[in-house]
Length: 205
Image (cartoon, rainbow, N blue to C red; front, side, top):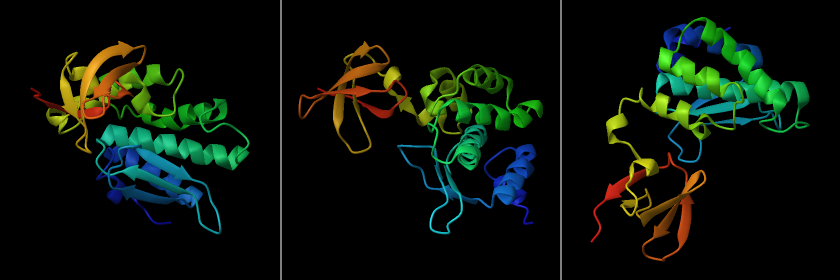
């Protein structure tokens, strides 16, 4: 069986690489490292038309985010093997598999203490994405090499202005439960933004 540990070590902690390599071999999964995608960190596709399981993970995640995302997607693969499409994508079956697959990495003390603490709390009820757990997301962000260049909605002052990647400009308004109400300057339309959405602060006359 091929050993993918060396290639995987470019993206995840060295001690985690042999385990993920073994999973790739055991499942016959096509594992791809992809360009950054704003809408998701990773993705799982079930087998179809003689194609194998496929997992993709964004290339620019820090090692701990990359590993957590990889485990997340392998939990989908395992759930599909057990139940096909008969259960919810992030239902109880997936949550149980995610916890079980994450266990060996926690036992190896691969994660820094702050990530381990946040991850253990997150695993009490894992969600569709680690990004939806603000505590875990913020802790993982501390380990990004470019963290000083990243701004999120919650870092923008109320009534402050920001733009998004497309160039559209917004003014931040009040918080509505879990999201921020923001006014698009050009259309005067209201949009809701997740607190950890990445934006670019700007000065606006």
